[in-house]
Amino acid sequence: MRVENGVDWLCGRDENSVVKREGVSYYTRTAAFTIFWWVVSVTVIIANKYILSTLGFRFPFFITFIANLVILIGAFLLTRFKIANADPVSQDQLWLLLYPAGALTSLQIGLDNLSLVYLSVSVHVVFQSLTPLVQLLVGILCGLEHWQRQTAFALLGAGVGMALSIFGESETGGGAGLSFMGVAAVLVSMLTSTLRSVMQQAMVQGAQDSGVTAASNKNGTHRLKRRLAALTETRLSPLTVLLYKSPMCVAVSGVISLLFESRAMYNFDYSETPGGALILCLSMLSCGVNGSIGTR
Image (tube, rainbow, N blue to C red; front, side, top):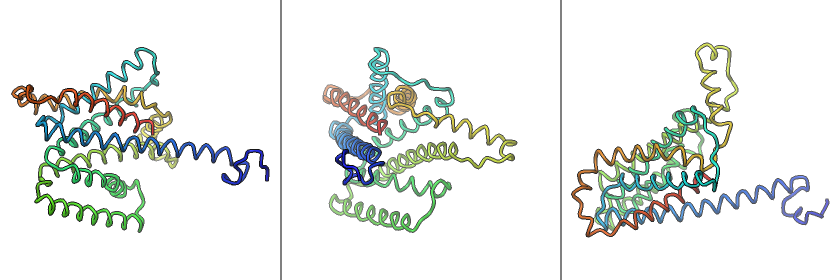
């Protein structure tokens, strides 16, 4: 065994040492971004709760609109002044991937904010922690994932844990932490997130599926799979995703806020709510959340 690399004893065989060191670096970077995303996400949730409940600024989709607008402006300025470059995007990527993802993302964030008006932070976090399991269950129902015994135990354990957490919250808070409207909003938010995840996973698996037969050529399935493959062949940079997804996020959240929140916002007493700076800070934090997710 050669020892000139100095880390063969840690990485294993010499011929794999470079690959394993790169793997360690990748996982370290991923862990750092995950921790950063978690810290910023918790901060955003707490700030949202403070603005929506304590300050009484109960306009969740307007907050979502402001956050997405700041993200869009930031991404535009970065590309406009050549600080960073965005990748070229095809029409298929825009209409089949980025725009639908933007609309679903805007709905998800807005519904998350709406649930915080009625739910305590602890209950909100409990529900949100179940989102990956809901995505797994829907993926199994759609044939994108395989059912395993470990999956059943995970789903059962998560369900019991959620029930105990919600029961404890209702006991300690006298039921004040629970609300039908809040639970409905967070559940729809989870389903929206699941729909986006399943849609993207179906695209990836459709692109990777090599079992295209001659019969599929007759009904157009082959052409669809080739279009899906084109979407997933090139990895878009986080800046590109933000630049092209944010306009749809702004449009969806802006229209919903205009339809359902504009009258109440017009009658709101802004002189007693010093929340403008907090909303702006929240928007900047949302930029960090989106950037960290995209980088991962």
